[in-house]
Image (tube, rainbow, N blue to C red; front, side, top):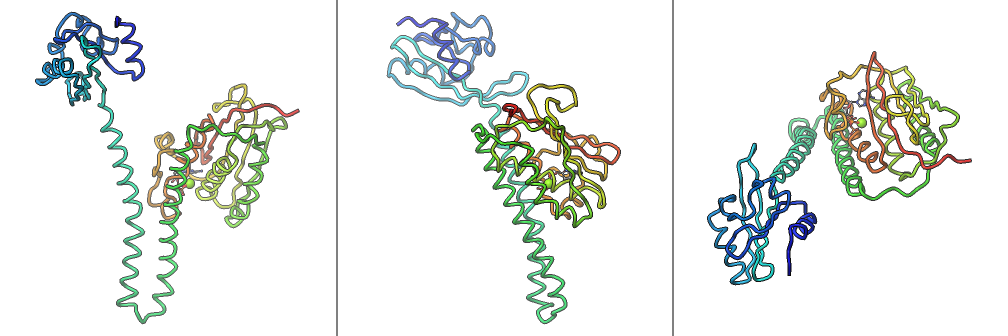
Length: 349
Ligand SMILES: Nc1ncnc2c1ncn2[C@@H]1O[C@H](COP(=O)(O)OP(=O)(O)OP(=O)(O)O)[C@@H](O)[C@H]1O
Ligand SMILES: [Mg+2]
């Protein structure tokens, strides 16, 4: 079998990692582009051990051929930053050995993200749990025969328990939407109708705060979109929830919808733009790009006391990703605007 650089490149492109082919003695015969980028452009014709200083590697290469035995090693290398690799050595045709370097440098970052996530969740759960434990102790001890204290504590306990419930519900929806992220949505829906139905549900909640939700739309903004109706409803539910929660009492919440306009208001063919606008405190510019991170809240104490766990906009962003949409948030002069764009499917006749 004739193995060329092209063959090796084709093989290694399957995994997009560095790979070389050596002869039975460990001299590099062929190297793919990733390998020459990593180890140098003059490596072919030289022993691999000159470029990868790993005591067991030369013997492993010889053994691979002689005993038909694959092996694996962990390897770290100082480039501009320290990089980690898994090296796999495999016999190929009795004369050549395939050495594959899988870059694992980024994997610890993923682990760190996961542990940050666990730390965040624990932190969010700890304070309502502490509060509940404190009240239970009081009710079992000093306030055991004090109906007045019971009247006072039980509603607080109920709201702390509700907060934990909301956090867990939010985390469950987030993980459900993450799992669905790569499955394109299939329903053909008229976004305006869907928004109207969510507004109908939220209007009473707005009225309780002396607010009103007003839907405005350009007459042509009736295009269909390809969407998952439940997920899209969740998007507007979350945005309206925020507008009611963080907007000033006695003001209007505007939803406006237009076709062929991009996030920045310029012409953009084939999208619907929906904006949810409320009046209230201006959000400082430094927070804006971080609002869609999970658990991010502008004023942690205030948002939390309002029942927020910082997951609503993260969920919105995930759903939009699945719908190939985008989100942009601006806040100016006491007016906060969350703008979405979503690709349209067609214009109904
Ligand atoms: N319309 C808005 N006006 C002002 N601030 C907002 C608005 N929407 C969001 N925010 C800010 O962004 C933060 C993140 O919002 P997000 O919806 O992700 O979480 P939350 O409302 O705190 O909790 P959850 O939605 O999970 O109940 C909020 O805590 C709030 O500080
Ligand atoms: Mg929210």
